[in-house]
Length: 190
Image (cartoon, rainbow, N blue to C red):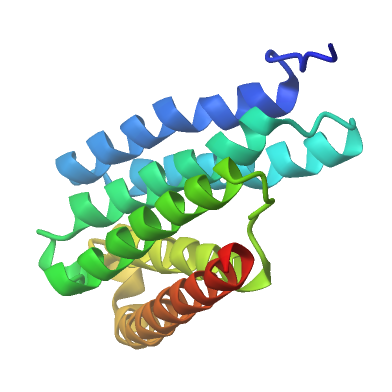
């Protein structure tokens, strides 16, 4: 029986996103915007790096395929939840509900389809959605970091406009990719 090694560099990087996510949540809750931005950038880099290393080192695993997107969802959904009470973040409860609802629905569908023995990994639309979610968080945290800086006052208005555009683009991709995953699952199990 060929058993996967658990403690690989990609899996360790995936798991490192959990404490980085907790650090991110604490920083947001305390209003430590620059620290929140740095912790989010570090966590996002581990997300890119774990996948790249898994392919490069031929260490793709069932753990990585399952837990990498799950930990991403914890990080992103938690950040949106912690940012929701921050007025300047521009996140309404319905927006956060759309993001979290989509993530829970697709995670459940993925688990069901894979329990039937069929592969149901992320595709380009789901990856685009994740990239846009990360861009939204980077912009929000960046704007919050710059908000208190005198030298950055002229940058705030254009950045807030960009924040709004990216936010609604991300919501459209979140809804669209959710519909597409449901359609794809229905075809696989039919």
